[in-house]
Length: 292
Image (cartoon, rainbow, N blue to C red):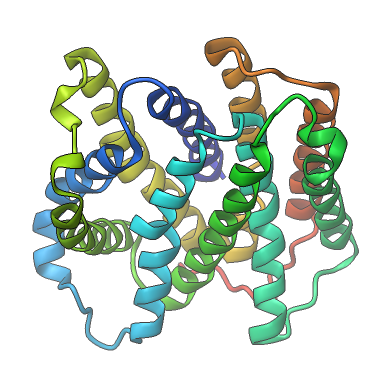
């Protein structure tokens, strides 16, 4: 439970820090280098023992983990922070990810949510719908572009949640694999971008600040916190454990970045938080056995 709360707090704060960067001095491609490259180097010794292709692990699960929490997820989420406020990012990613996870689990394993979890998922859906309405986009010109991509990022994160649940890996092993494969995927992509990389043109203070947040707190500890939550509590409860994230991202964006926080934004955040709380209460042990 402590790991789940920590993951939500890190995730919410990461959204604020990322939006601050992408709208000022460091672009998303440069942030991706910091997020995945630093964590991959730190976990290199563990990766050498685990291997890039762990024995007995289905490749589809590895792909689901890398796509869902690695470079594709990171680029989609970080790029869209330029278009939508952090309140939208918090609600759509923390609120929609459990919705996608529930749908995926129902399609793949016929897991049916009970009454409490259904009510919680309905509250999350309400929060997502509020932001997608004309009232939710009022005052945020062009926010719909970011909102759609945040929903895609939420679906990818749900895929990571379920893939890691089935992988049998430990939390540190999962973090090492995601960051290593993301770094390998970065290499040809950076070669294609070429001169468009301006990482070291940023002020040193901003570079160190983002290196701390992207590479250490989000890329390393945040991913480990969430993976540890899945390993101990199961995928469904981990996916529905992000109640603090929308609050941190919304208030952080308003206080630190000056993002406008409308009444609809506040209502959507409250609905998402309530939904996460209800869904966490209603998740049974059957069908999602925690790993010991």
